[in-house]
Length: 163
Image (cartoon, rainbow, N blue to C red; front, top):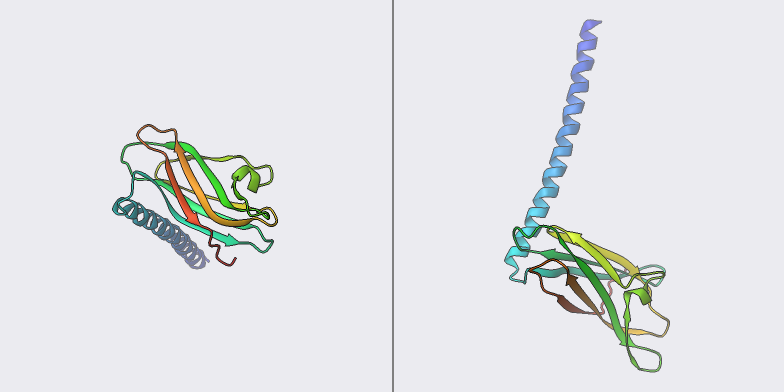
């Protein structure tokens, strides 16, 4: 009986060790990806505050899911705070040029998205366009509150991927 109990304790210890090892391997993988991302920021030759990996995908309900990474590459700057503003430019049914801000594209939406991060922050959301609006581009502007960082604006062509 004591041999069976010892064998059970050994099996439990091995299972627990395997679980801990799997958790540590997952954490190592996550940290490795973050280090690669940060190295990419530093070697990209961009300014200290910049946008990366903007994507736009059409959803099944006809709206659009956007995602962008806001990053800063300065050392010892601490927490970066500010606002992200997103506008979609295009033409309406009468052919007039219009620019719609986030509050017009999201039900009960705010005009800006708050930012607060150390190295980077992923921002995403779902936007809907008015009927008969033909989008042409997305403008994303970062307005930092953090000293030492300047405002950044980038314009992306309206090219959604299939959802």
